[in-house]
Image 1: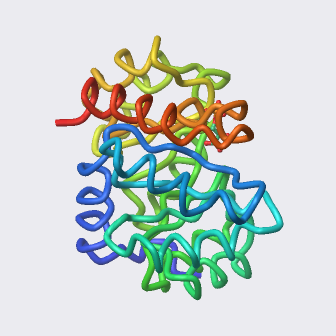
Image 2: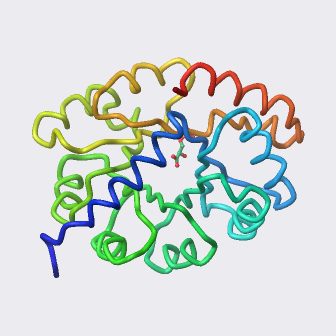
Amino acid sequence: MTIDKQLPSTRTTELDSICLKAEVIPVLAIQRVEDAVPLAKALVEGGIMVLEITLRTDCALEAIRRIKEALPHVSIGVGTVLTPAQYRLAEQVGADFVVTPGTTEALYRYGVESPVPMLPGVATVSELMVGWQYGYRRFKFFPAEASGGVKALKAFAGPIAEARFCPTGGINLDNADDYLALNNVMCVGGSWLTPKSLVDAGDWNAIRRLAREVADRFHH
Ligand code: 3PG
């Protein structure tokens, strides 16, 4: 096992440039494949350029394919990747990056070799230390609120000052500012940009307005 292997520095640069485009990344679990393109379009028209689409639903891969084709300039993170096999599927549908809720040694190893960068999910210093040894410097902090939130991230900055995070899990309009104010937070993610009631109702205008509000408030 090549524990000390460093990721090419371009990998961190790639993740940074994706996250810089989006202080807030919507986390989507698309239930109906026909919602994929109108939902993504509403978010993009509202000013959101990076989306995380989770593999939690049966139509997720087809939804990603359709969005990539309709909106090729949008950066797509494929989320809820639990295994190297799912990582490979994410590569095949054209993921710009992969997001995992937690990590395994197998995922860390796969990610080091993959052409698609990974934002590995960590909740503790120990998990962070394992990722660090593999060369990872950018992480998802999940589930953020349940794992100590802002206080935990401030504490992580002591021993591992170079690590940067995209916290998700329990983040919303009320607390996003507290996270984004931290030096080790590059962006935040969450499902709050796409409330289920609006998606189920196909109310793309309301989603566009919400995206616009979020983009105006948080994006550079
Ligand atoms: C994720 O996978 O990042 C979370 O499901 C998003 O968490 P939230 O629903 O609390 O925003």
